[in-house]
Image 1: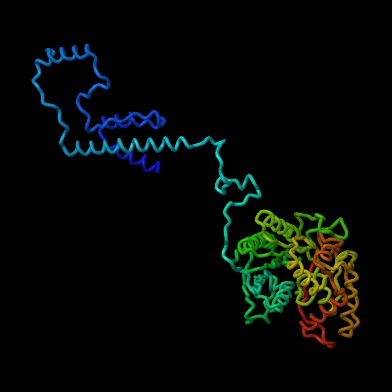
Image 2 (image 1 turned 90 degrees about the horizontal axis):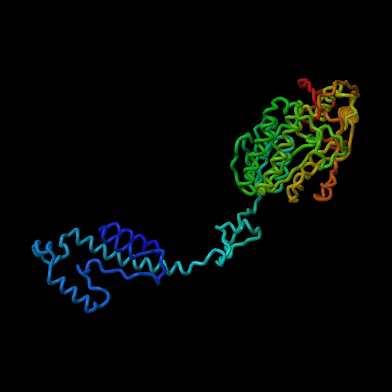
Length: 491
């Protein structure tokens, strides 16, 4: 209201004559109180010689009469002039009308402004309700708006859980896809097939709940899902050392884009980290609180440090954006669908034994590993996803074996299955930065996830040997005929 009055006053003031402006503004003192407002004369009807405000005395009357009867010499020389009449020109009349309007608006504006000003209290005496726009919520963390907002009822949760599995065509990823599909989930399997194989998920092609997407996680992905299992990354020395820069990019950019997706859709995200973040540990067995002993510039660092920065990203998105996360540190998983040439110690030993070759042991064979069968690993990952735990949590088998013991057990199983008498080992220099010991402390997994491995090494190894025998189409009278792969690293 004040603004409207002010605008009309200004409009009329600008269109009035200069004399009218002076008269109006002399009587519109915005700084005055209502008691100080002076009456404003009517500009358009003012007489040329207005009468005095007080009655004249006798002496004043006499002097006035004498002055009227004796005009001055200048008046005598001047011809009489008719009484001055208001101008009848259109422009002058318009200005006069606007001047009157300006006078009235000015009076009204002054009264309104003075009344409003009298009601304004100093800041220290004002009472106000807490407001979101003043930033009260920053001063009081428990601040809530005085007005309760009522949302529409309903939920976006689907009856069928939608799950994204990156690296879904790989060794672990394909087994995870199998379990999720058997549970009736809607599964999106993403893989760029650098180390994965499409044949691992062939059986689900054409299923209404399965969707295959060939995609590199170093590029953004836009899908709507409820859970994300982020497994995409080459995990064997032969593959991650083949293109170490790509490995680092996959660990960093792939995890960042998946976290961005989880943030956007509100999905819970699990990442498969690794026991490699402990490096060559000086603490045994390895607890989740151990920070590790890693060579950050070695030939294994692209994977070791890559997984460490992946965990960093996970927790920063969790702290800064409240993304729901889960970090699993998995230990030496083995089982069917392992690649025969990926440089892992289990697959190396089995393929060499099936070919009738001497098994290659790096170092003196005293270094230790803890091997977790794939079925136990999948149970552990799903348990962690469904638990709501953040982690990190070790998922592995605490049974510890030396590499020499693993080699002997492999030879024994292959000889029994193929009725052969193969023996023999060859020793080579240990690869750079190869850890000497590896054993998980799974106390957190046991207490918080109610999970523990159930399949021992000999049982799991026997199942894996059977897989490779079927894979190569062998029987007792055959020796596997595949190209010899020289692998210079073990995991």
